[in-house]
Amino acid sequence: MISDLFPGKRLFVFAGHFGSGKTEISINFALELVRSGKKVALVDMDIVNPFFRAADAKEELNSHGVRVITPIYANTNVDVPALPAEIYGMFENKGYHVVFDVGGDDLGARAVSRYSEEFLADRTIMFYVVNTKRPMTNTGEKIEQTFNEIQKSARIKFDAFVSNANLLSDTTESDIATGAGLVGEVAGKLGLDVAFCVKMAPAGVATPTSVAIPASTAKPTDVATPIGTATPADIATPASVAAPTGVATPTGTATPTVTGANAAETEYFGNVPVFRIRRYIKVF
Image (tube, rainbow, N blue to C red; front, top):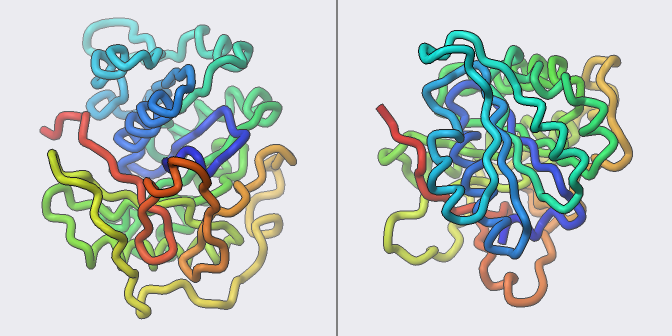
């Protein structure tokens, strides 16, 4: 299981630009944590886009035992979103493993900054989700720019990237490979890893064997300025929020170690772990 690659972590934060797919990933990650025997809550912090929210899958999540905390809206036309006080309980109740779905762009990330002290004091891991098929994140320069903008607003450093090259049902293996390679290049430049890449799991189809990423999309071996000097100085980095040990990079310099029954369940795309997800959010 992908969640096994991040031992010791309790809070899982997924952020990214509009259309990155972070909401679908958050929902699927929460359900996987439940399958691994954890007591799980999912916090929908998306106060930016009311049309693609984790709250849309609340019934499904509740049926699997996931507690869902959603924004409060002042009226039925969802004009004025607000984050509920119930969120603080998730920081205090250490019995929960909590997944946070953060709104798109730097405005949405401000919701994270509101709880920055709580995140920094706990066992948190921050994921930056990238869909290289979206116009605002389809080049290395754009990915790095949006990454820095959102990280600055969140006031917490990201720990790893998630590659989610996605064109819905039109997504090809080549799209996934090219996306993973591009995200790997940016991650390497920033001194981070690609934690995993995402594939949609066809209904009723078993997980296929891993497919190698073409050499032309591999991350370059040279790595630029480390993360500590590549981001704004006013962003804190707690010692407890270091990148998880053993997370794979596109160059294959670190292969995740998964032992026990779950070892056989980990699929790889090249040297990057694959997270197979289902679609829960209705696409209009």
